[in-house]
Length: 157
Image 1 (spheres, rainbow, N blue to C red):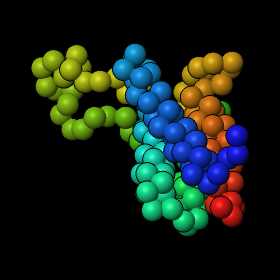
Image 2 (cartoon, rainbow, N blue to C red):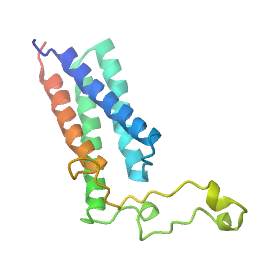
Image 3 (cartoon, rainbow, N blue to C red):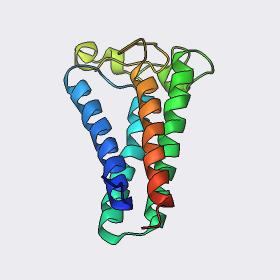
Image 4 (cartoon, rainbow, N blue to C red):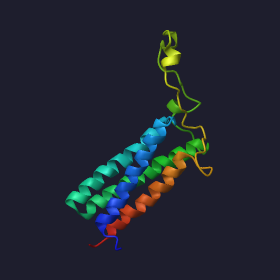
């Protein structure tokens, strides 16, 4: 089977769709996302939209736009990986070093602690599968999808 530009775009956008579906499934199953996890979803959502446009309109420029999304996704996943592994500091709003309060007076409200969702810290290393975290897996898959987008952009058909 020859991988035409359209098929490569379909694979790349489909990969982002699968990653987002997996993220929502794991969230549904109780794996609450941190702030950086949520940020990592946006480039994949945009890549899905770009894939739909590219499959409808055609043109290499859309494949390059999809590749740019995967560069952003990979960058965010690498950043999150570094925060988890303490290679560098993360945003103060979702790491152990920042102000983690939920706002003035929230602790004073009756039942506030029971109604407040648990805060998931971005700098907590939580191995998911084969010793890698979800951010690590997102980095690997995003780099793979980047290769598909670049291959689609370089296709002459």
